[in-house]
Image (cartoon, rainbow, N blue to C red; front, side, top):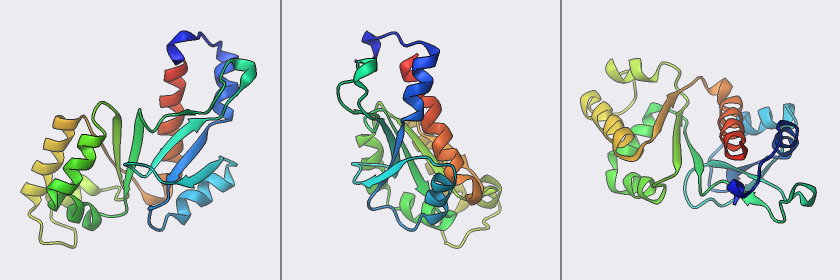
Length: 176
């Protein structure tokens, strides 16, 4: 539908100001993320997503020809893991995680792990599970290439900013 319209840069900026982030209702403790949104006056709602933890939508804007909300959870999701321990537990149950990646097929699937030195910690087995580091990396890289998943290790204090910027620039590109 977005391909039908050509928006000016000014109109795109207006639409992006109205973007609302969707936080999955099953998301575990994420107060540092929502605190960031609140501090920057970034609107968000909590509702169930079919997969992933965060996505976005643009509310209807009759003036710009958007007669109903445009949801992007069918185009992009961000999956947040709060630690390498949580990530290793998730990917060690391959079938469940892989089925989530299959549901996200043909969508931008961004894996955000709140461990800024995550890659180094995996290599040196500096995480709190028995999951072998070679198998850990092999699984991550296999899923990355098989499903087009982006893997990002970031400091927890930047989670809200990371989520916002990923969604903002993805949505912006959809309107260009």
